[in-house]
Length: 268
Image 1 (cartoon, one colour):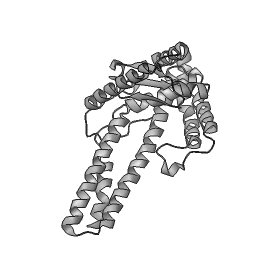
Image 2 (tube, one colour):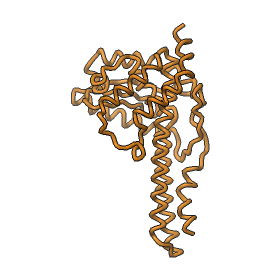
Image 3 (cartoon, helix red, strand yellow):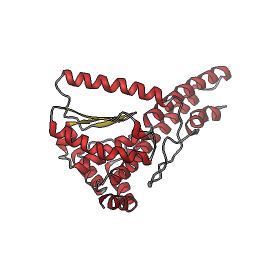
Image 4 (cartoon, one colour):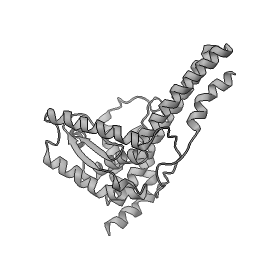
């Protein structure tokens, strides 16, 4: 019985139903667990994005630097058409790109194509257009691969697994330590998935920027800048949901031979 309780979260997390995208040149075709619809997630994301814009505008923090806004929108205009490589419906999304004035080093793309860059990441990293494309490609990849929907589904599974294990423990008189062990296993698997999603976004983003005519080598310079700015203050990779900058740089360099031909073709 104790083995069954350990396996509950693992069985749910390992179960898969479909891939949200085609593989592309980089091979992003991993199957994923989805327990909610894309429409539900995209509707909530759109509401959240509108609220973020509303609050930023009220504080005088939305699109205050025309030059930055122009650069971000221009990069988006070049990348978005190539999202069709991974999923044909993506070009029909209601894409939008904005810049929020903030010192934070952040950018994101919500489900459905709602992009936000913070001025801090552009300014503190002194980003080139290619480096903006590297970040944007990465964030768009999260949306294409529906990582938010996947994470939400994983959270649902975790909650159900812990609840089910607790019931079994009460019914069969199983030591609660085994229940706790099952919950920890579920958490560890979820963390590993988080790092996998980040790496997946890196490789899809690399292909997107290459197809859009941005040199993929600038993804390397981006993370070198990020590593330098971090100053060694990040937590160890094994307890983080994000790969270390060192791991990212190594992985990106390994993929360059596969995506550089796409960049060269785009330049012609």
